[in-house]
Length: 327
Ligand code: R2B
Ligand code: URA
Image (tube, rainbow, N blue to C red; front, side, top):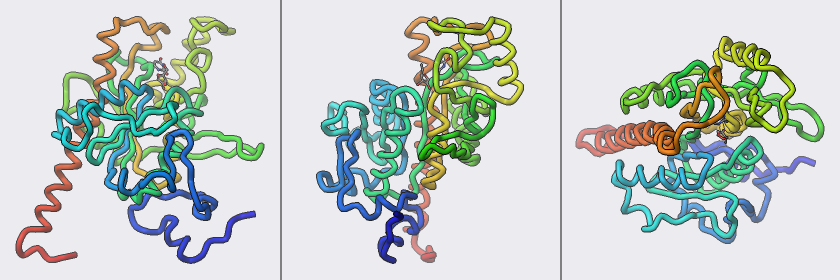
């Protein structure tokens, strides 16, 4: 049975401009919301006080990379005063994910694959909603396999696509197939590309990102424990993906795009390529090379946040200037 909302609850649910939308009416009738995998809850934590000022959420696979990202943010954007030293993990008593905050930026790890990303995002979106955050931009920072690109190239995703190169994701809901769009925010993608070019030192390209449910057979690798196709068949598939506009392959962008779209969040995906999948399967570059590659999308996103924050600061100064008419 669908829950009946009072007019007040409906207004609270999503209609205020800029608030993060939770398009699940049941949530708005719950007396308490326990965000189990984040170790947080609406009755146990003051979410507006802890997270109400968040404007940017950056998510990436590993906890150590997201902690490193917050370190770079603090240095480059002078946000050190806004974080505890050492930087603490804000996920209470659950160690599935890690979350760090510096000023208006929240950084969280999402683990590997669609199910892990999905759980994090459901709870993160509700967290942003309960904290009454406004005008939030969400960016996935990650690694991927490239197609026909120099390793170390950064790909900004136009759209996440499925294994048939379609901008959609199929989810089973109550035993029925539901197909949802995985298009990403075009304006944000263009901004991210411009930031990559401004940072420089590496190539940044715009293209489609294929999201798979597996690293080995799902990504047409020959080096998994199980493989039922030939080298030629693998190449036919990867070349077809390339011709369909796929620039890179990873494992979370589809559900990331879907959930952010449905919650009205501006979302972007920025992944570095660790290897060219048309040339091989093994990720065999030395650790220091891979670590430097992994920092590239981080620097790009720091540049986006820097640009956006200085734009907001300018707006604030202009509004405060004598003679400025209130809108
Ligand atoms: C990129 O790298 C991981 C697999 O190695 C996966 O999380 C992804 O999307
Ligand atoms: N991550 C992936 O999902 N695939 C790769 O090939 C490399 C990193």
